[in-house]
Amino acid sequence: MEKKDKNNLTIKEKLHEIIFEADTPMGKLFDVILLVAILLSVLAVLLETVASIREEYEGLLNLLEWAFTVVFSVEYLLRIWLVRKPWKYIFSFMGIVDLLSTLPTYISLFVAGPQYLLVIRTVRLLRVFRVLKLTRYLSEAKILKNALKQSAAKITVFIGGVIVLVLILGSLMYIIEGPGNGFSSIPASMYWTIVTITTVGYGDITPVTTLGQTIASVIMLLGYGIIAVPTGIVTAEMAFSKKDETISTQACQSCSKEGHDPDAKHCKFCGEQL
Image 1 (cartoon, helix red, strand yellow):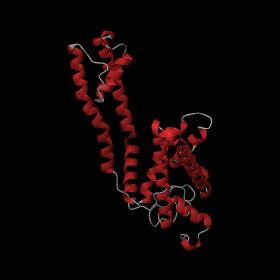
Image 2 (cartoon, one colour):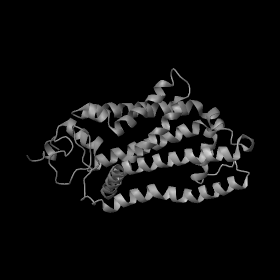
Image 3 (cartoon, one colour):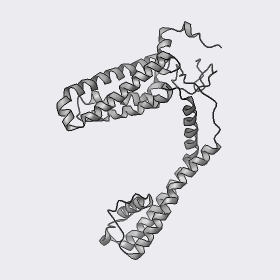
Image 4 (tube, one colour):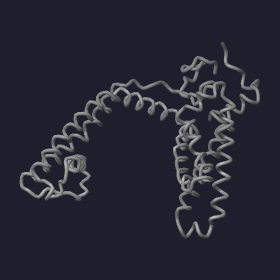
């Protein structure tokens, strides 16, 4: 089945192409305007937290917040209307982000404070990859995603081992140092072990005895190896991942998924015609 002629698209299909894709000048312009609006809205939220600016420009900042919220709400509703299967978009990652980027302003009508959660709009800047048509980065992102997925089981087992190690070392330090030296309980000693093994080193709890300091030194050295292991696991998976061919920024009108081959005629996720 052949792709539809670009000149014979309906208004709804043209709007879908503009809002969901960046393969056309209008689509790219829409996304650039959207990204600028997102940046300005986040900037307004950040400035509102500065007391001196809030006192002088509170009215303007509130007006801007509501203006951006209305714009993003209309955009969100348009996206729902333009896809054939709205729930696919609504429950997608970007669909949830788009919804969360508007809700705090409405919630602030009843509860004070949630409007500051609007900084979640920065996540929407992920669309910059589509705007700039950086399909190479979309392909690289897919490789990274697959590598993380393949590494999940190994990393889970590794983290489980680290937790057991933290429990053993924390208990040991509690026995050696005791409450008198700040190790007031096994959970507190485990907290110290985590801080030490990750090389954070807050310094709020420190071993005093010679044996405790020796064990602490071993934990610090062990920490470097522990930090490197997850990185090595993911890197190994990425090394064996086959790099995908060039993909387009075209979005399926049914499920809103992107990442199709340039010559694809049907969505590889739901099978609908592109």
